[in-house]
Length: 140
Image (cartoon, rainbow, N blue to C red; front, side):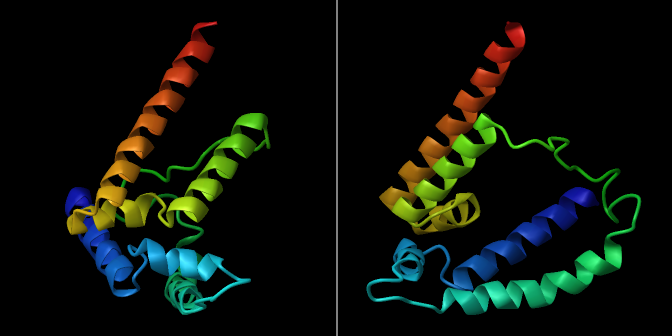
């Protein structure tokens, strides 16, 4: 049942990304150009997401477990370290340069855009390199 719910949530998320044009890198880059021709329309996407999700966060925040899964999955890391700063900086720079972040990039694969395909390939290479780095660090 949890796999079906996950699939439905992913489909709804993908539809939302498409309708809001968040899979269009030009739209995202237009939002980031605050000193040029600025496109503020994504603010309404953000506000809409907050209006829909906030009541659910408050409604379910005290639950011991999710409705359709065995447990919540949170990072146990509570410290700001070099790895976190470098990773978040790379994420932000990649988003600002390419106009895509992981969710919209995967949804935009349906458009068969070469930029989206290459972004996703390099994103997974990055995932692999981080995993390899973690394994190397643990081996020491």
